[in-house]
Image 1 (tube, rainbow, N blue to C red):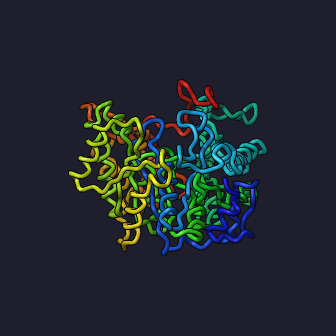
Image 2: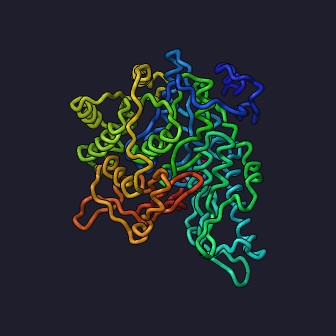
Image 3: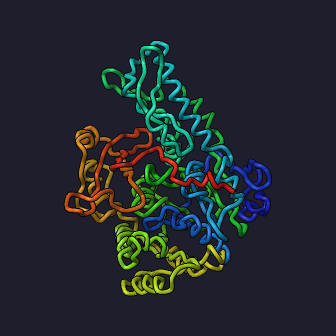
Length: 512
């Protein structure tokens, strides 16, 4: 590794804005970063539906950054901070892999600079203050059974899905923990344009309801200054380096299946001040992270997205076809159809590995050629920057073209049911939505008038959520909740938990 101060000097970053965490990590103390420079080129990396191990979006994003720099471009990648929970669960770390990763890998995958811990503490302070308020006499007449906010922890722990909070001998209520990456405060942090915007959003968080169903907000408890102070270092994006000595900015850490799945706007804004090409990634498949990046983050911020990279692997397509790649190719086609909705140029990057069967690779390439889809093989995992040169050249070609603004799937002024239906129809490629009685009863005129974005939460392993009585794919919607500070209507599909569990053989048990 090179010293981070030397990496930043290559990007003309003034050392006065660098707060060093040892030799290899720095926080960028840009007090008021300009909003995203529209002259810069933003590229989004997404993927087809993943295997449990993931398909390499982060790896390709890092590799593309290295390849662009190898071509003489000034590029940096903007990534989410890994959550410790999944690091010890199924997926392991989230700092890339092979010869396309960010360093120092162990620090990034673990406690890093403490941002997620700070956010965890800030969230749990709100919970503690609410319970204490009730204990001390309950001036706001909060209904304990209608406390909306939940405590969080950065760990996969299914035992915390059902707990009892005992405030005193007479008052208790049932609740659960969420994983930190899924909480509203994480979404607020990642979507905020500035610290002032963050403060306004936190103040408007509805955290409970009183006994007459009147909303109770964070502002009423006068604790926002404390929350901001706990999180003061989070507003400085983290700077690290790729294996090949290029800049990577890590900021924010929401999941894409149960949250918005994109890095912070703070991180993107800072990146646009120091690089010409900004490569970011959105979690899980394109129906999750990419849809939310475009329909939520871009509608909110008018970001100049120039190009999309759709990552897929032979393993993923075989997995989706239950062992038959000729059936699994349908999944790739659905993601391609999804990308076409937005009218943004895209390229399919086949993340190639040594154990891929030649006939499977040939089948996928023939399919893409036949359907006039621009694609390339990417060998960045094994070959580093030189394995991503073909992809980088395609991205440069796309990024230098002038494109129209993206076509969003929905407009915020539409009804909640219309917005959800459009996502399911256009992005998931499905007609049937089954609403639970609880979800159906939540579809009120008052909800429609909020003009909020939709955050659809579902199982990421496949596009649909269930099979209907005829055995055809459908989407079952179980519950709707509103995150007022994040301006999100969170639509929870069947069997979705905001607190993951560990698998049969979690990586923690074989940690090396």
